[in-house]
Image 1 (cartoon, rainbow, N blue to C red):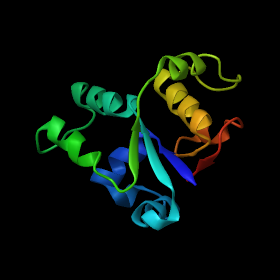
Image 2: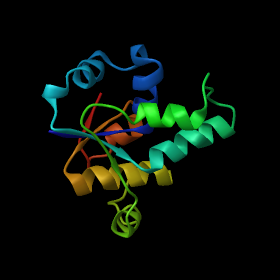
Image 3: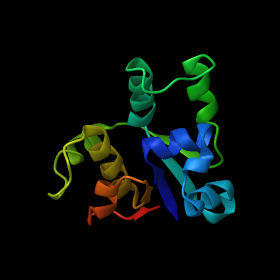
Length: 132
């Protein structure tokens, strides 16, 4: 099974794993339970925007934090391809207009993966599998 990390899951796994659900924490702690963990290229950008807005802080160089946080077992960073960019704009209706969430969902759909997320709106969206 493949999983796409929502941005907050990636951040929490690397900063505050206790904020994750027990199910997600156990899954990520046991790499044999998954084929691959995917991270959209939009997530490091979202992390950087949180730093810029002062909604998040790190005690080391932010670029160093990003590189360390990308060092997860079986992690693959998924680039924002032209195809994904387009597909994020033509998702079936009933999803809110957050472009980063649209890209994460398009990534999951393209990769036939489940999104790990606490986001209630994403979890209620019936056109993608989610787990929390």
